Image (tube, rainbow over all chains, first blue to last red; front, side, top):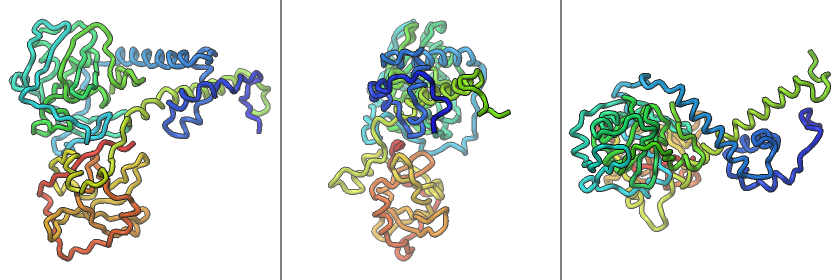
Length: 257
Length: 168
């Protein structure tokens, strides 16, 4: 049967063929692929689908707009739900952009946290230095963009306490992280100062195990899982957009919960 | 009102079309996200020639309380995460190795039979477990578990089980 939505002027079907690799890269399930049509592409790009960059920049513009709206809606004083310690999943769930067999443990004795950017005191930190600062324990849900979640118990110095201690410019826009597994990440300053954002060194009362980010990882209750870099080696406070591993592959940057 | 009686291109029909396209656009916006977390698959089988204990040691075995393993869903390490069964109990065999007894197979919980899988053939996947060293076809040939010659491992015992990243 002829579709009632079929336009009078049908675009050249060769356009879809020309953009086949791009469409392939979007695929996850057949359902989604079937949802993708030439019409949708036309709408996204103001009718200019001859250039793949146009499609990508249109999608990225939507994503950036989403980020801005999320930042506006973010309430720095609203706490994420917490749970009793009895609900902590032991051990936590492992995830990374590679399988567990490729995890490279970090030597805690030689590990140093390097500081850069808009920070007054940029001396490197040892794990003992971090643990000498006031600690906080939170039992929160880790929510992955893939759809799974678990409840975990994390202990560490609140990032706010740490940033104040080293004289960071708290009016700066971004706090960026580098990690031993080459997984750069960054969050907005408001989320960095949220009371449920920690530089975590313990899980369920025990030293963080190797696959979960020993000696130190970021753990925040206000962001999706992929905004929680493990094996953190450096922190930078900056006004220049730092991006991140998945963010440079099209994931939303703000990724708030 | 009979919508099919409207002429083509009427404002109402245009609105319907726009909504359909918006929905499609929303799908595109999220499609890349779910895809991208799986740069390398999780739950890889042991490399050829490697025994179970050696391959389990590469998966960063973590301490876990035996009582916390009971009733966990056991999955196949593939993107569709097919359910293979559920953990019934943990036993120690005569030669000291630990095996996970799984209520295996069946349909909607009926017609399952217990099989014992070496703990080194399995991994923890958050709240679930996976069998990484045997395919479902191999598991179907496992003998039905008989407790003779094994001892149940008490709930408060801590054992070590390897990890995997999600397979999806």
